[in-house]
Length: 227
Image 1: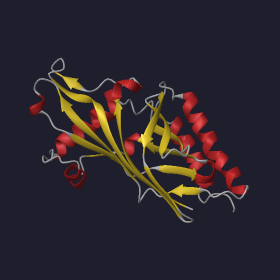
Image 2 (image 1 turned 90 degrees about the vertical axis):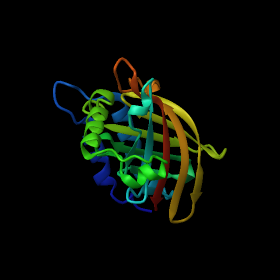
Image 3 (image 1 turned 60 degrees about the vertical axis):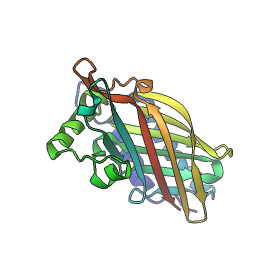
C-alpha cells in the first residue's frame, strides 16, 4: 500500500494549525510537535504494507453537551458544541490512531443537535454568538491553544485508551467504545464525561458563580475512517 492519501496535505496543515496565533502569544510547543511526528509516522506504516485509514470528517461528529449550574441555573441556557472537521489517521493493525480538530471551527447550538441532546430551548443568534465568543476567548484561549489532539490506543480489552491534549494539558482517559473494523472502514461510537478543571480550564460564570457553566461535560463521538 502506498502512503496514505492526503498525507502530504494534512501533515503540514496540522503543523500550521498548531503553530498559529498572533505574536507575542506563543503556541504550546511540545504537544503540537509530538502530534505532527505521530501523523508523519503513518507514512512509514503504510509503506510497510499495514492498513492505514483516513478519518472522514463529513461522516464523523464529536458533540459536547454543556449543562448550566449555579443557584440561578434556571435563568441560563444549556448548549451543544460540535466538531465536524475531525482529521487524522488510524492503523488498526497497530492498535492506534491520531486525530485532531480546531477549536475555532466548532459550531454552537445547531438546532438538531440540541434536540438530540434533549434541550428544548433554542438560543437567539445573538446569544449563540456571545457563547461562542466567550468559549473561544476567556474559557479555551483558542488563540494560544487552537487545536485539540487525540492519541488513541486500542489494547484489545474492548475500550479505548485516549490521551487528550486540550488547553495545553494532556490527560489520559479510558473510554468505552463500540468499534467496528472491516477492509474498507472503521467506525467508533461512544460517550465520555470530562471535567474542564482537569485541563486547567475555569468554567465560565457570572455573578460570582450564581450562574455558571457546569464543570462536567458530556462528550459523544462517532468517528468514521476509510482505507
